[in-house]
Length: 307
Length: 111
Image 1 (tube, chains in turn orange, red):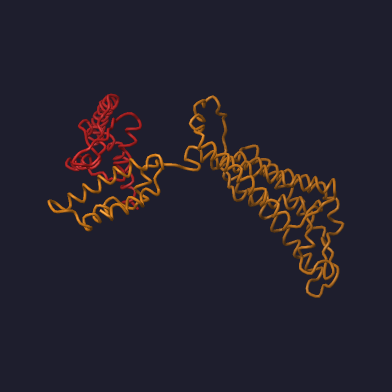
Image 2 (cartoon, chains in turn green, blue):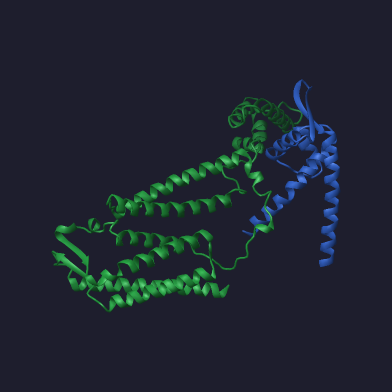
């Protein structure tokens, strides 16, 4: 019965220590009886043991049957885990932008694009670890069983709307946040351009000056609107109207800008990049952003009308 | 894919039925292997990896009583229905019969 003993040793490695002795004894009896049945009236040999073991299956599979089903975050908690994670991620992004703005206003600190993403990534990573930790603790404490007891239909609020496209909203939030930081000089892009100031620099013309506050207010309003819609998970009548109005204002500003070129001045070595080319690029970028804005508003409107 | 879905549904359906079969069989005393063979004799095949942990779970829930005894010079753990287990079994059996009747009625109406 050497083969059976080796098999039981293997199974027992994965068993809970408290029940190990009992379970192994039961499995031994079962395997021996099975081998005896296969051998008939003869003494069971290694081939009978092998057949009995093969029928019982992989040691880990056998042992796992005694452990019950265990999760780090089980199916009852998982939906709330995802919602919490999303909410925390939005809050973290908002806090990060607020901190950067405060740091610029009070101390005059600026940051690079890489620094912005590094900071965001670190904060999102740490908050994810905390959220996972809290939910694992809830799962193991057994508290999850009490979560849904007190629920009643009274807590429901009448809502109507259409589901959001998370990817689109997150892209919008990142773009708007980065724009706000750049527009307010917190995010410095010059360091990012190959060659830096010595070779080439690009500055915006006076045309942009009257737009400092209008663009700040417009993009900040967009940022808050998209954060709210992402949190709610729904486009509703009010938020759709706000989105379309903000989109319209942006397109109007874009048209005004295009009609007031030049929009940028180029200094330094410009052998490969002329001022006219720079202006054409900026105008093209504005036109593309206007088109994307119009498309965003259209898709949101269409989805709401369809629902 | 369709085959896989069928297997999953079949597995889910069998899960509850297996408990009833085990409780029904343990109205007589059995140890692990003899229980499996007794069920197999009635065309109910349950692999050991499912049956033995299930028996332990039912015992933990108080539906089965067990005792270690020596038989043919080997220590074996014998299981049988506890009083509480008998009550639960009878109730489950009643539910099973009712459900079975309802489903038959439903299928007959469809035909």
